[in-house]
Structures are given as C-alpha cells and as structure tokens.
Length: 237
Length: 268
Image 1 (cartoon, each protein chain N blue to C red):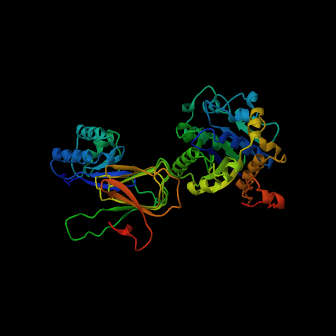
Image 2: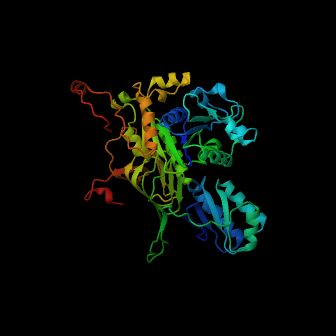
Image 3: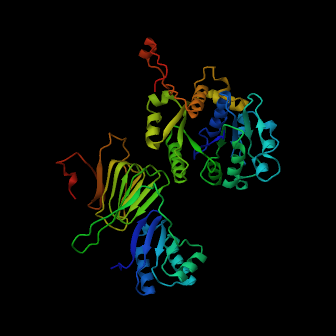
C-alpha cells in the first residue's frame, strides 16, 4: 500500500506535491512509490514540492531533483517554511514562492464536503475556457472543462473528466490508476481516449451529428455510450 | 498620434503571412495611413521581394539594433506610395540576433511617426515568434482552411492569450469556394467555430497573388482591377480602421442563381 503522507494537488502552474512530516528517507521512498505507481500521470509534468518546515541542504534538494528527473518530472519550485531550505533551493535556481494567482484566470478548485466514511474526498477543478493546441492540464482529482479541448491539447486527470463542449484532443481519466473513471463530453471525438492504462482511438468513420457520450471501461475495453436523454441506460455506472 | 503595432503570425509556414503583410501595408498606405512594414524573419527575408524593394536595401533591422545605423537610415521608402516604408530583416544573420526587448525598442522609436506598424512574424513558435509578438498591440492570425494550419493557429492563439496580447483576430487565406462547396475543404464557419476568435478577413485563392509576388507588385495596388483577393486586403485594412465592411461572398454561383442573376451586395 502506498503511503498517503504524500499529498498531490493541482495548482495553476501544474502539480503541487506536499511531503509529509515523517522520516526523510521514508518520505522519499513514499514519493518514489507514488511516482512509480502512475507513470502516465506524472511523466512530462511540472511539480512544485512543499517540504514543510524541514531543513534541506543543497545535496538533499539535488537528490530530490534527481529522483523526479528519473521519473521524467520537472521540479521547478520548492516551498518551505524553513528559511535555510528556501535559501538552498533558491541557490539551485528553484522558485520558492508560487506568486499570486493571476486574476482573470478562470480556474478554481471545487470545495468538496467530506462525507462520513473512509475515502477522503476527491477534489475537482473547473476550467472555464477552451484548451488550445499545445496546452496541457493535469490534475489529481476530477476535471470539468466548460469549453472545448482542441486537437493537440491534453487533459490528464486522476479521476473523471467532464467536458461541456467538444473533445478533439487527448483526454486521460483515472491516470493514477482508477479504472472506474469516466469521460463525458457533449461531443466526444478525441484523438485518443485513455482511462487508467487503457487507450482507445475514435472510430474512423465520418462524424454523424454529435451526441453527448460517456466513455468508461467495460470488460477491459473503453466503450463510449451515447446519451439519449432520461430513461436510457447511459446513466448507469 | 501613436502608431498601432500589429503582428501578423500563424505558427505554420506558407499560409500567407508575408503576402498579407505586404498587401495590408499597401492597402493601408493607399487609404492614407502612414505605414511601416517590419520584416521580422531574420535570415529568411521575403517581404522586401514581395514589395519589390530588395534592390534598395542598404541597412536592416539588425544594423539598427546593433547600432550600425540610425533607424531612419534603415527604412526603405516605397516610391509608389508616399506613406509606405519597409524595415527589412537581415539576411546574413539568424533569429538569435534579435531579442524581444530590441523589437520593443525599435517599435517604440517608430511609433510617433506612423499610424500603423505591421510586423511580419516568422513561422514557428520560437525566438522569432517571441520577438515578433513582444511589441504587439494587436495580433492577426493567418490560417488556411486545412487542418494542419488550423491546429497551428490554435496553438499560437493559446500562446498569445497566455501573454495577454489578445484578443487575436483571424484572417482565413486561400479559400477555394468550389472545393468548399463540394465539401473538400473546411469552410469559413468551421474554422471560426474551432478557433473561436473574431474574423477580420477572408481571402480567396488567387493565382495572381503568386504572379504579383514574383513581380514585386502586391495585388492590393490594383484594388479596382476586379481581383477578389486584392479587394479582400483592402477590406481588411478598412476593418482594421474601424469600418464595418461586409465580408465578400465566396461562392461559385449555382445554375439557378446564375439564371436569376441573384446578386447581393455584401452578404455573408
């Protein structure tokens, strides 16, 4: 079982990974295990690390850097409440302050009310714009896009992806390994559809009139089912 | 009055950036505006040829930046139009010779004396694109009705939005009405819907564009010759100046329409 002392959050600049307060070596081990468990989610991403009040020397930070490098993750910022750590990180050319969130960027987290029970709530992100070619959105929880995902853009989410618009790019739901994740869109004609470790392409035949669809994994395959309104079986899951 | 700085860019090469820059420069100058067209494609300059000014270049953009001449000395005056100037690119250097700050400085120095500064951006999204868009007040995106060009345009629009240079406006170039009607080519509505930015011009495919480029005589010079493409450039110039000009109708008339000579002035 992977330690849950490592907390992953989506921020505007990419991912924020908070490291727990336990023994440093154990934390590094836990971080490595998290990265190894979901390579598809992390590969090519940018990460800011929150190391809490811990004092890290330059070699410590370089070790972190190397660890992330091995998993093809770019470390760009180290956040710490410890001034010595901040100085060391800065000397290594890392950012130590995320800066104010830019106004007008319509990205915000959803507050999820925790339910009684074992599972921690999965956070969500609402993005209210069109993702254009070359733009990439990565978030450990659910992602809701109000707008289109154009060809050449990608969205990678740990949980479900819902798009109020067209999907023409690459969408990857359940990228942390959740096969129960779904992808819904008003017009689902992606370059590629991925759920957990499975990959599907859109059928080659020409587009009929677009209908809303929901894709999920059924018997080991990604299947997209059109939504025909209330009373259809598409609401099951 | 300070000039408006417009950068013309596209992502993909060969879609008609330089053609638009040359023709728009001519059209604006013919409408009495004081215009400088800046060739930002250092190392691969073409704008000078399209304007027929290549044999008059003495100094270039890089000479200005590196202090070998004054800005005024580098400007090539187009003798056909009293208010049109070209600031040529260097051909013997490459994009690394110019920084975004250099470009902003040059444009700032040009601002007072002109109404429009048109920057012809290189293709791509690297250094050349960066310095060409840095000084822009407004951005014109050129695309063709084909999927590769549209995707690259989408990429560039995203970058421009991230730089808060927007909103970019769209010129769709090289439309072939016949192919659109047969469903063999994306139509204007498809492209506009996908890119979701304002349209400022549509230009039909026209063989005369090539001929005029080779001759160094942009089509916009002969706006009254009946060339639809030439007229399109003048329309874009007028829209840039705030006029409300209807888009020309790009359709091959169907049989019935020919019979009835159903002519609408303007239309969609």
